[in-house]
Length: 334
Image 1: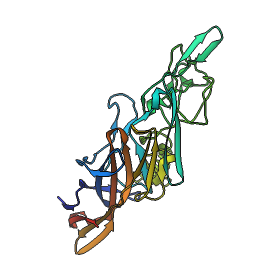
Image 2: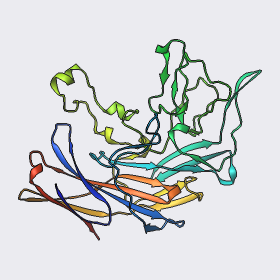
Image 3: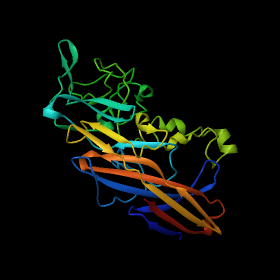
Image 4: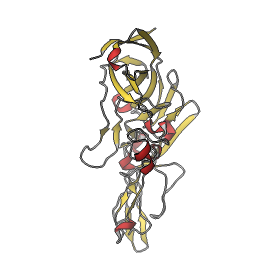
């Protein structure tokens, strides 16, 4: 068993992964948990353990992802996700929520409950109901399956959000009286008719079988089976490892930046300074001592819990040298 000497206050864990060419990489994972007080100051809290795998809202039925697993290869850049709710000041029926990091802005419009209602003039949309908070989950956003067509081959789904609502197949029968509309929409895309298709919007993480992640997995055809298997396909794209929505995927880590949130915290507006930790990792592999800096791989905001987690990763090549790994040491530099 490899000797992990963790000299940081954060939970740490080792695992071994293979890259696209089958080379072994020793991955060092650390996760820092920061408490956010009302005035947005950082305070130390009880640390949250690393997750060995993804956590879904419902582990038995199709559902959205709460947390991506923490162990595995790093993504090419950095992911930012929000696990929480939209807050509506003064019980409004609709509110815009958003996040800003530098010049990157991601905004959505959140409605209270709306339903399709059938009357003499056909289908119409009810007025949104006032609300105090609304879960920011993909189940409340545009998407879903439509199995209503008489011919099963015409059933369809929204591959970017198969668990949402409001999606209707071209040959589907349309919504029933009382069906819910999406509560989370793009600000510039308004549903007026059930035939409309709009873009799903979210702030959390997406599983590997959803688009666009699935598009990056590569082609698993006869050529792959005969020439590459069990290695990853030639057209595998490392962006597959990004679990955040595209609007919250960054080319570089954003530690040291300030995140601005509106209507995503019990208080209407919040600024969150992202701490910048310098974590040095050393690995003794055979007679060679190699060092690396752990990179911020994922930042997760949990505003309702007043928490911020930062996942750091460092990797070391160790093909045919796994048995020579004597120890791994982590240090938090000032």
